[in-house]
Every structure is written in structure tokens, then in C-alpha cells.
Image (cartoon, rainbow, N blue to C red; front, side, top):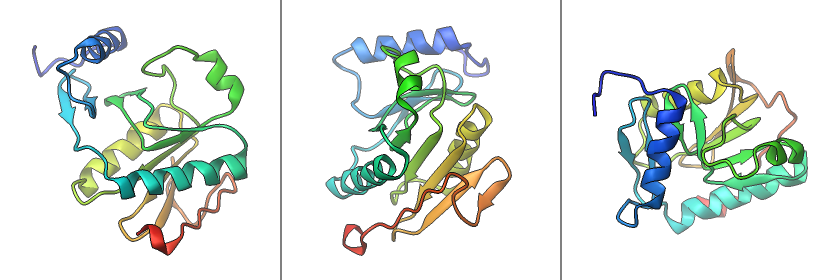
Length: 169
């Protein structure tokens, strides 16, 4: 596969589906815009606990429905935010799609020790450029940043107030 040619949506989706059908494929991965496999370590139990707490908070504050580890198409390939949220009618419009053809309204990344600031900036920008209304980044110690197209926001433009228990970190 040429690594200097950005793949179109159809080619990326085809590659994603081939990997998903291959029992030898890794469990946790993304594809960059060239169709190259980006391996991710299996999330820890603590990471999943934080993601679940965020999903529940989003459901309580915005209504259903949030989901964990959903593949979405971006301008930087197929990415998998830790938590996403959008209205039920948007989910219904994309029923059966993997990856989703549109980015959900809210995308959340929970940082782990292996992710770099450059990578998180790239993902945040990718979600926002293709339609996310807000990207939330949760730091290693539970700090919360809200991002919009204009950059880091002092708070959520959607009225989200994530207060995560210190015991999760």
C-alpha cells in the first residue's frame, strides 16, 4: 500500500471492514488517512471506568445516548474516541454504519500515559473539522478540557459539567 496517497472514504471503510472480518486482526486499532494501521494498547479497567462514568454523565446531562469506542470517519482516517454522544435520531440515521459516516456532536478522549500531546491535538482537530460540536479531553488526573473550533473553551458550550470522582484517578 502506498503511504503517500490519502485514501478516499470508500477505500478506508473497505480496509476497516476487512480488518474487522479478519480474526487475526488486533482488538484495538485505528486507521490513518493513508489506511495504515495504528495499534492501540488494550484500555485498562481504570480507563474503561472513567469512560463509563463520562458516558453516564453525558446521558444524564444531554439525554440519551452516549456510546463507548465508536469508530468514526474523519479527515485523518478512522478514529475511535473513548466516548461519543449524539441525539437518538442521528444514531437512527446511521444505524448499521461502522465506521460512522458523520462524527457525533460530542467526542471524548480519556488520556492514558501512552498518548502524546501531538496525537491528542491531531484527534481533537480531526473531530472538530468534520462536525463535532465539542471535544472533551480528560487528563490523567481527571482534569477536563472543553474544545471547540475556536480552541480550548473555559467551559462547555453545550452546558456539560463533567465532575469525575477523584477515586477514578
